[in-house]
Amino acid sequence: MDRKIILITGGSSGLGAAMCARLVKAGHTVYGTSRKEGTGEGFTLLPMDLRDEASVIKSVDRVIAEHGRIDVVVNNAGVGVQGAVEDIEPAIAAQAFDVNVIGALRVCRAVLPHMRERKSGLIINVSSIAANFGLPYRAFYSASKAALDRMTETLRIEVAPFNVKVVTVQPGEFKTPIAASRLRPTLIGEAYKQRYDRAINILDGGLGFSRDPDDLARLIGFPGKLGMDGSKVWDAYQQGKLNEIRDYCETDVVNTWLVFARFQLMRGVFTRAQYAKECELVRSTLAK
Figure 1 (cartoon, one colour):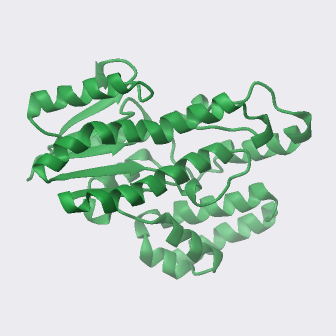
Figure 2 (cartoon, rainbow, N blue to C red):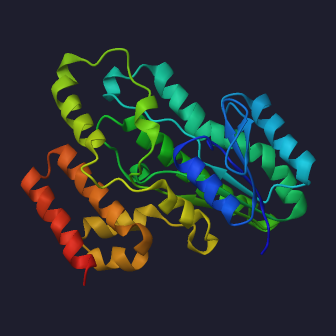
């Protein structure tokens, strides 16, 4: 096995912790990051604040000092945001972009000189299917993840001559603690409160379809499946091409399709009866 030196931001919980654990079991040397230094099951948690460039550089330099290289970086750490656009203070919007976009940029800037010099490396930016459209009361989460996708597309082209690969993974809904730490406005305006409460209840309700973070960790562990473009799934959904979605991304089709259906429910496009019918259509089609 080709043992890799892997750095995963946001490795203390949720998707990041699952990725760290699975890649350690696969025999790789894994470093996660967290706001505080610590240890996981077989991996080290380095202290890193994505909003502090010196903190990012220090942790990257430590891994390189100990192993001489970083083969794979997973920019997983991020922050959620909820609230009507009008209610979101500019400082909150700026914080979301500073973590979800500029934070990933800081990590890329720290590792790329080493990867370019070695003419080898893989950067995986964890985005979201929410990057493909504006989710009600989650505008700045969608916008920040869309910005991360566009940055990734450009970076992929720019570093290709150095044999450095850059890909995006767009997860759907997983069982993680991100909801508890979402940024929120100081006040929910009365003009939006009723619809906001309804939308967030649907979003946080889960409806029983949230997936195990290890499902994404398994995908990260098989680089041949990386580089998925969620916009293709979204286009197929809009056109009603369920079989195309199944063939395109079998590992995440149920989650992806059902999350899209829930967005329609949140928007008021689907009634609950229509949503239930859509869920049954997904199950019956995939069972064929």
